[in-house]
Length: 173
Image (cartoon, rainbow, N blue to C red; front, side, top):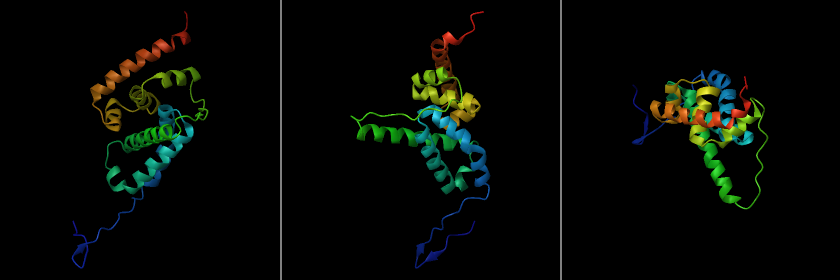
């Protein structure tokens, strides 16, 4: 590995540019990650901003991010964390103002969106990763920085709650 250039005894750090395969990663993953963040934070505009922010961070660190087993998982986690922080800031600054959430796109049954919204965000994130993004338990664990066993237990609790909340949709036969 080459040593970094020096100028008057000061090490010069040269910024690395994104690898040429970032555009294809972006094209393949932008929509699915955005949909997953929408389902998690329940705000279309905020999810789009969060995905843009996370993709920008991935681009800036692509030399590192591309080596992850699931770079889309990293982008999802960064986006969700950014969105949750933005929601907290918004809630602190507009404590007494009414907040309107942008209407969610009807990607699935509206009752399912309501039921997902009633879940704790940790449970909701696991459901979104496993079923909306169709990630494995291991990919979900990596993306959310939790253990695979935690993914399984959260998924089990989430599915129990969803089953109870959506029991009216079951076929009576």
